[in-house]
Amino acid sequence: MYLTTCDAIAAILRQHTGKEDVMLTDGGDHADVASTIAFSLAKELRKAPAIIAQDIAGAICDKVMAETGAETRAVGPYVNFIFGAEYCSKVLEQAVREGYGKGTEKSERVVLEHTSANPNGPLHVGHIRNTIIGDTLARCFRKAGYPLEVQYYVNDMGRQIAIVAWGIATQGADIHAEGKGDHLIADVYIEANRHLEKDPALNAEIDRLMQLVESGDPDTISQFKIPVKRCLDGFKDTLAAMHVKHDRFIYESDFIRNGDTAKVLSRISHLPEARIEETLSLDLSAYGFEKNYILRRSDGTSVYAARDIAFHIWKGHNFDRVIDVLGADHKLIGTQLQATLGILGERVPEIVFFEFVSLPEGSMSTRKGKFISADELIAETERRAMEEVTARRSELSEEERKKIAHSVAISAIRYDIIRTIPEKSTVFDWKEALDFEKQSGPYIQYAHARACSILEKAESYTPCFEAEGEGEIALTKQIALFPKVITDVVTELKPHLLAIYARELADIFNSFYHAEPVLRAEGKIRDRRLTLVDATRNTLKEALETLGIDALRAM
RNA sequence: GGACGUGUGGCCUAGUCAGGAUAUGGCGUCAGCCUCCUAAGCUGAAUGCCGGGGGUUCAAAUCCCUCCACGUCCGCCA
Image (cartoon, rainbow, N blue to C red; front, side, top):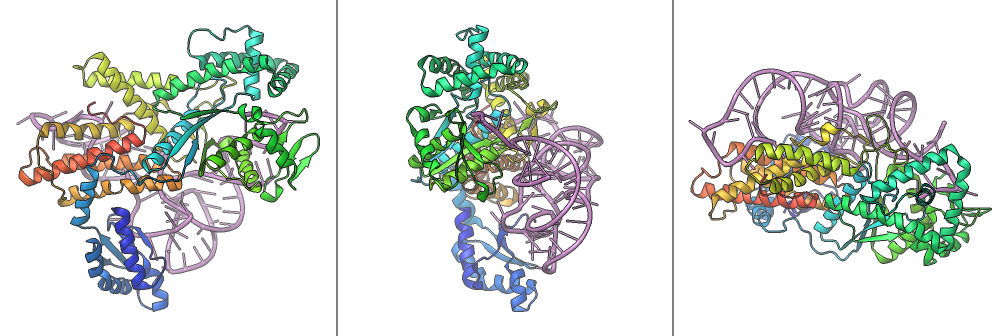
């Protein structure tokens, strides 16, 4: 409703002024949408902007009213548009329907890769920034109507995995031991790295394992496969706890076994940018890259980058839009990948880069065992949430309280991570992670539960799709923005916009709740407000679910 | 040294790409609000050379130049 109304106003302005860009901007407190076109017309018309604004407003106000129901008002040099009652009615009618905000079904197939952490230890608070950005984007794409496949790319043949396999063999570790596999693998990996650091000559054994696995040696392959599977099983448990699911796990080694890597390396070797010495590399200096992009080692094995090119060519052939979520440490290799795919004439992926999460004492490192695992974070947040739920809802059974505490914990974690723009590096802070107040997931869940509670107590009412008074209108207009926010997230790949939106909706609802009685209102006012509460409830529910957060009916 | 990103009240943060009205919120601080729809809440107050300097513009947190600080990367690792 918001977008169609703005489009209609823009068309009228375009027709009247003859300008392509009619300078529509957010009206803030002054208007629902405003045009600053009077400024740019001032020079050529040789008139004051305020006069021009007056003229425009006078000339188009009837047409705007007839077509959109919006009021046009010149305020100083601005032409302001204030949406009217008809707009609010239509918004409310749409917003109470199940699935509000869902876009029309699109045909463009999208593939989204996220998390893809190396299977050499548990997911930590840095990895889950990738996970949560990726999963929230995925949910937004589905909400916007795109057919989407979410993939996890498993690095099952890199140096890190060779180190794990070597560690298991040399340490005599029991790979089938009880417990969560990803944590078990971390212990092996950390220990193996200690040995390698002490005696660097041992790296020759790692190199040998990597050659064997690439040449297809069955024993080495299974030596790699078993720990990778154990680790991945651990990841899947952690991801499921965070409401994250991948549609498909794609193994790096598949692109060796099926010959795709060899094929693409041969294609690349014929490029004018190719440099064939002991190694095969690409000279991408024309694209602003200082150093050559090495794809094949002097011992004939391929590097990660080569397999990655093969993987992305495959994705480009099977999907219309390819999106990767990658940490800032992948910026160089990611942009080299984009440049190379461009040279090859293949589909170039869009990459969402996010900056690092560090600990107050410094950066995280799986190799050094310096990290806070996602499992630890979840457990601690659940413990805190349980305290809170028990204090508030002592009448509930332990099982019920645990269920709420889990939902609250995941909500706090997911929201804390998604609300910040990905480009900003952050320092992990327990106090902030465990905060369930304002600007948190639980705060928004609470607003939703509050709306549910009112509706439950109301029992019956006659829906009335009208908004009157400042509070009701402000809430309705915020509800109206939800579909636009979903569209913005998928076009700009900025999932934090949804987090900000949901919080603002909860803010406005809370203010409304405190200012306007709903159940104690009478007659039509009661019907009107209950309808508005229902529209808010539904919009909050849809927004929360798109954020991967449970919309609890009570908490 | 080079590349990329970030810098917004004591702390955290939105807005920057597509310049426009009084810079968004939170934490913390202070003053209020539960005999009334869930106080994980609400209302009000104080706190800002939007990193520094220069420029473009009627108009700059936003665009350009420059400097500074922090993070990341610059490996025949992934």
